Length: 250
Image 1 (cartoon, rainbow, N blue to C red):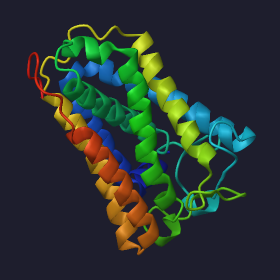
Image 2 (cartoon, one colour):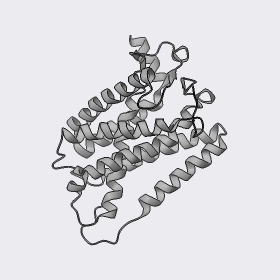
Image 3 (tube, rainbow, N blue to C red):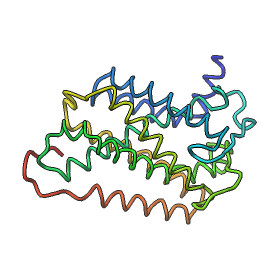
Image 4 (cartoon, helix red, strand yellow):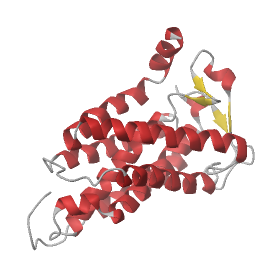
């Protein structure tokens, strides 16, 4: 068991680097208990979605793992243990991006109300999906980098061989993760320091540039240009700042 966990930590080091970043930033933003709650709910929902999709095709479309390329790593009913962890920090970073953008667009509403808003949850799922549009196509080329050839979609897909159902599935699952978290927490009294939102945005861009860098390194130029385009779009959205009419948060 411990050998399997150690192998996972070595092979999937990048996942755990981002996970540690999530644990640190989220703890500063809204405390350890909320951070662990999102980790628990997020992991379970993500794992259930993957376990369902490899058996039924919902919500991402039918895909299959190449277990022979992940020999020795731990699995939970056919799903790599490490894979579902990524949903937690991706959903969190999408939520922080949504919170950052909305506080720049709305200069009057208190930041605590914006954070608890269901519109922020919806935007958070959207930003998470956009991030996956950058991630999944390069993950699909895992045989060309250290991820490895770990899965495939039998019918292929329209967006660099990834089906559009995958991105729709990511939106639904991110929405489910953030919604369950919000339903179980009114998010009263947070954030204690609004500057922690920028750290969450930094995590979002960290994941983005990590995947964009891999795309360029392996020479997937068309995908790299497309991913760069998504980054520019996100950057333009983030850059917009409504003229101040109330307190200046960010």
